[in-house]
Amino acid sequence: MTLVIMAAGLGSRFGGLKQIEPVGPNKEFIIDYSIYDAIKAGFNKVVFVIKIENYELFRQTIGKRIENKIEVQYVFQDNNSNIDNIEIPKDRVKPLGTGHAVLCCKDIVKEPFVLINADDFYSRDGYLRAMNFITKNKDINNYGLIGYKVGNTLSKNGTVKRGICEINGNKLLKLVESSIEVVDGNIIASPLDGSNSFNVSFDTLTSMNLFVFYPSIFKYLEDDFNKFIRSSKNLMDDEFLLPVVVCNHINSKEITCEVIENDAVWKGITYPNDLEELKNYIINEIENGVYPINLYK
Image (cartoon, rainbow, N blue to C red; front, side):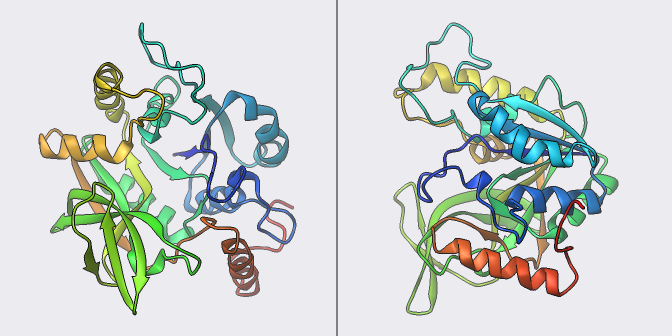
């Protein structure tokens, strides 16, 4: 069972590489806790999607201490990866998007896999539910999305971006990418496409990019990426986004995606002040016996 971790982003609002910001009492990173939880849930392989210039940093600070616990592989998200005869502006620094990050894995990931962001602390329940889905699901074009209650994913320090789930039964219909904020006690979602804001309840399910995929996803990504590259009017800034691909192929009825609800509290570092809150949360989890004080000793 494979865990794919998208770690090529820059974390601009936090200021620096969030992926290597220590959060644990022994300088553990968010990634360390994600991998620890995944191992506990039964995963035996992790794939880091990173920028090639960060390879040594990742290997020395993260890879080395988990190499004897789980199989580790690295994939480089390069702005010229999987692009035929199209020149990406040399000045572009940011990666080409989450869809491209996953597509970069197509040559080494040949099995069902779970996808996460490097800078999100998902809690163990998400990995357990993802593993349970893989065990029971028999349709390689039926994917899974671990849905978090939006009220469990907020930051006290500002707005956050979330994909609000529109669901029929347990099947995903649409993800409404939105900026979420609390105003006078109400949770307000403002769609990023500029459409009207709307109220959501605490229990409204949202995507944190914790997806369960099968290798069948790579064909859809490859076809759509080629179209994206050829149709983009601004290759300096446009991004090839995974949720867009998933929703497009749900609409065309080529795939389905089950939304699996969980009650876990999401933690992350969207803003600098989120860091202390996350550290305190981890200390509390250690005191409750969820994690050892030193993960890998």
